Length: 69
Ligand SMILES: [Zn+2]
Image (cartoon, protein in one colour):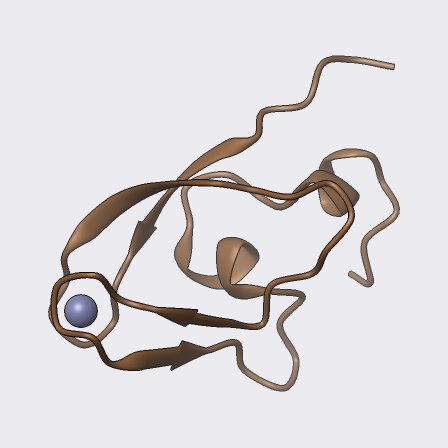
């Protein structure tokens, strides 16, 4: 197995602030709060998680080929 990249730069769709977030290998994150504008960001119904939708790096499950895609 290759090494997983657990850091993703998530860009807030509301204010476009970018923040580096550490991803969990066990939890799928479908909701995230922007630290800049404090608005809630939710993954779209068809998206795996906020990292796959708004981040620069897909979540660990997808990196391992276990994602829902
Ligand atoms: Zn924001």
